[in-house]
Image 1 (cartoon, rainbow, N blue to C red):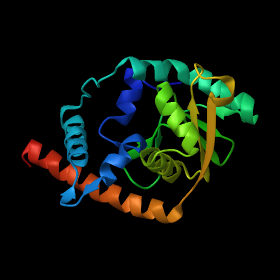
Image 2: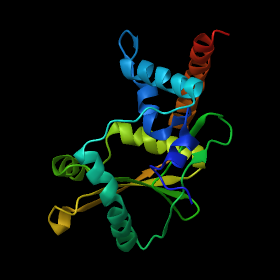
Image 3: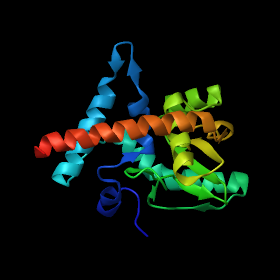
Image 4: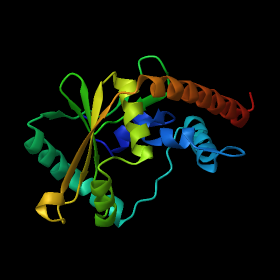
Length: 202
């Protein structure tokens, strides 16, 4: 199986809208579209045109998150008695150029989204007992792609005291939000195509 983070995995995602970046597409300002939306549009158009993905920025906190994710998955399985299936990438059944890489499939109807942030951020999530908006959007995008009915948001930090190491929040599918989001993604993909044509001078 192709593992997340490998060159083969990046190739599966190249030039496609992925769930983790849908929040950038939906980001609006009072004057119109946001800088993050425009930057993402150019990024995808370049990936489609050049057939390459430029190396992305990583730091120690991101590396910690990647390294700790397997431990978080085990903690979730032990805590919920759910078995987690791993998949590399899933394409949306109807929207070409849109897909996701959930951190796990849970049974027939569920997904798993794992975050292993720094301790201050984890504690913020733990106290709020809910995911931030950008992760709500990411999970709804994953449910749109997979047809899942729910997604468990997990924040995990083994450095914390035992009672506050693991946060699990169940997020249900929001059909109205998904309709709005899919329309925005379709519009965005059209804009990416236009940008690609400009680059290729067609």
